[in-house]
Length: 428
Ligand code: CMC
Image (cartoon, rainbow, N blue to C red; front, side, top):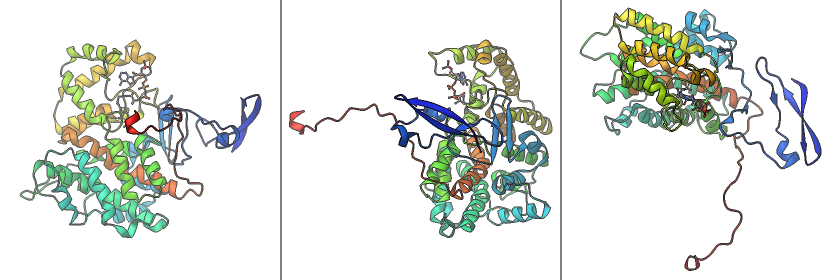
């Protein structure tokens, strides 16, 4: 809906651009004709003021600390629903009724196994390979196995590929873990929940019975909900950009995994726990806060700050509560949790963090829970990728089914040499 205009004067000529209002949130200025009309392009590195697409999946109000998926708040979803329900919601647009949910879970469950040949891929990696390196490779390799779901012009194939990706990520993630510890791969067991099945594939061994702990299952399922989607973040934008060229879905998700790995994005959960362990005791916190504030020191408080949230990340609130629940259920006390609480408290009372509106984000507390469950730190980002696959495929489907979809192709501000004559090598 267009309701007001933005005027721009270029070389004395006045141009008007329509604004478009979404259902909630800031309006956008529609500058699609800018280049054709003025020969100029906009400059916005990091896309801080650029909407790259329209989307009906997720809404964030960064000032208020609000996160909604298809209109439902993350607090309600994480408290009352399951990861499978949220996956359905993101993918299909509405919460499922009982029959729809059962059928969706059945479909996902029927796609959990991976082609047996894929296990040979794992054996090509060093045992000490980072599991995210393995995930980039094996998820990309899925396109070599599932040719019958790579025709992106067919909505049925798109949905099959989406189901396959959601279903197979836990299997591949567990295999990456098993490979790193030298234990046999564990096949999925389809009568377990999505999350229970993942826990079993990760932590069971053939020599013993394994029982899924319902408290851990619930906590991990909630962590998956908290990571399921986050509108146009770097990895989702990567998936969209890769997909905009018509690349197959498995290749696009592999691209998303590669982007997520970075410490400024999904890799922050691993980095945050490593940082908390390095700090170790509350007395050492002030020294690390001082380092984070020092412009000459590249150190940043990992798990703090966010491009969009200028308030407490609502996911961090749920995550902090979940840490308490998990530690109580497991009857363990982790001194690192106290370090985290005190670090948060000190930072939130420090002028630097107050002025820059830096608050804990989703990654600040998640590592403490994952570590208490038994995951090694290098698996943390893999779990993020597993959960975010839901958001990635939902965005990918939304983009491909948009009739206005075009290949993503940003422009640039060229700063290289102006045209110059080629000199033969002997004259240089
Ligand atoms: N510690 C210390 N200073 C910080 C931090 C931090 N964690 N984050 C931002 N700042 C400062 C930054 O130095 C800058 O200061 P100045 O204006 O004086 O140059 C100011 O705050 C704004 O930061 P920015 O880097 O321009 O902001 P951004 O929106 O480009 O970056 C961010 C956002 C998340 C990459 C950044 O806050 C950061 O590196 N945080 C640590 C890594 C992290 O926790 N990432 C997880 C993000 S949430 C989950 C996900 O996306 O995967």
